[in-house]
Length: 216
Image (tube, rainbow, N blue to C red; front, side):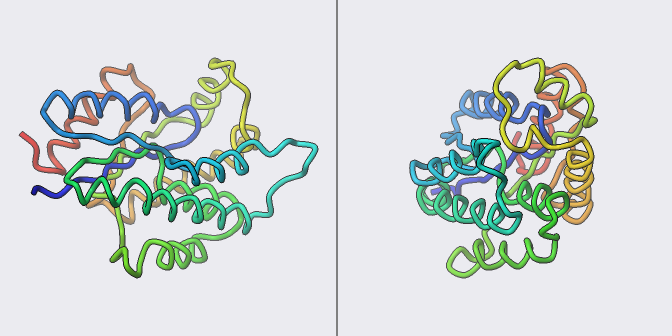
């Protein structure tokens, strides 16, 4: 059985990760590949309970302590891997996840005050051990300006979560964090200009999948 592949989409608010993840999944299925689409935080029933607690904390309740917020993300991720990602890969399926560990590094490590070194320590603990250094085969980082991303979020008209409500300086640090991650792991990460039309972004994503994962 051919091994499954694990592809993650990363980027700031409004970058179009969910849309492009769906498009990539459809493109792969047309090529006869079994694909599981998932997301973080969440992705499995137990992890979705953590997602609800993380993202929808009422403003009158206060805010998560930065360390607690970070730990909750890793708790949801470890459950997600055990429930969904590993079983799918072991069956030879491809997994596409809308966010994974790089989001915690960018949001909590670079922008949220926990610090990259402490997040890296948690990542080694949560994703190492029996997981054998669990890591995506390819990470697609959708990049665009903070102003454009937040304008897209406002245009959606949906209720904002705790991250979308944070100040612009936070989102700038998130973007810088993602670009730092990409620079530190060029063999795994591909930065995609997400400021363009959907089809142009999709074309670059498919080209990256072909080149990085050896597809015809």
